[in-house]
Image (cartoon, rainbow, N blue to C red):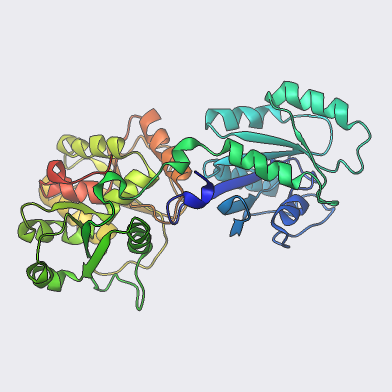
Length: 397
């Protein structure tokens, strides 16, 4: 299997790390053959991480991330380092650049190991270094891996870096699938996609697009409808669909009218399994039974958007929780990269489907919640739980 076979929408995130002026921006420009990052001899040129999604020959869909030097200093330097640390949580593979002998990289190497991020050490600027072999020995002793000898200026060593990226790609990343064993060639799959105020005008949301693309690749038969036409869609079929995939907000309504032999799941549950730890989310949903009106729940959204009426995270789930627990239940909402370092005030975290995050970042949030003994679940899982149908919901193996 190659990276080109990975699930639609799943891009390998490759972070470029190193000290200031080790040539990170020049290296990412050489590796991608584009001027993605600003290059300067002045220290601290890269401030916020620079993200670039693209296709690389022999690698496939990736996101390259250029980061600030982790030896930055001063007040703004501390802010830039904090951004680089956040990038760590989103990184599947780290390219660690050296422009001289190792000095101070040990702390960051430990951080990579703690987050299970594979490291590819690279000696950049080999075109001007006089003692490359001696530096390579010290780097191998430090990282346990022989470094790639490269020069961004002369564009040497780049093919070896791409080869190493393929070798370091986790098997778990390659094996991921949205629908798993729930759909195969020839299976009829019915998608229920409400077109209400939350639906973007003239387009489908990302989980819907990714699901359709994967089902097309599997050679499944696909039918789609709005919730208003769901029963008519069922009546028009010669036989029931094998699987119904629905938006979480109409989960209970679809369940009431689905054919007895049709399995049912939601886009959010599929995304929860693809992007996170579905077992941890199911376990977290049970924490609802331990909530009372003095409890505090955190809603975590991946994307930032203006609140809408009928909003699933800001309106529907809070209303369902307060109906079960009581009107005094405290609920807070965070969005985007905002996520509290201290989760102790919260009895439960309810995360969205995370279509805008990569798997590595979602797993880092799950790990943080687990380490702080805070239950965490997902939009689709909690809505199925509150509707009493989670145990009957199909979850891919």
